[in-house]
Image (tube, rainbow, N blue to C red; front, side, top):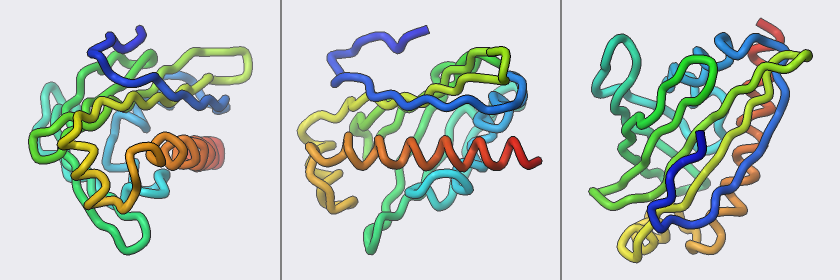
Length: 160
């Protein structure tokens, strides 16, 4: 399922194949607290609300150099073995949609991480203040972070 357009920016994707079943990879990603192990930017996740045993809302704490900030997140798609996605806001302003799609292959599971910029002008300004990055730099920073996140996810699941 492709995220529906909300007038948001283009979707950026990165993909890797993990030698594990889609259900296993999905379960790891849907345990959002584990993101701090894989992401070069996320340092902690606090789940604030659960629905049927899965996170529904959570706060992500992020760091890049001397900059530390938090975002609030709401799970919007949770289809085991297929897709997990969440919308990110800060101070009530839309920031992005992050998600993961899973497709079984003969070698395991293709994992596609995607990011869609949803910032308005207020969120772009807040982003500059809290992350030290101009709005135009965020896609490049996120693509590099996505590559590292997927490599770390792969390494953890394949050596478990």
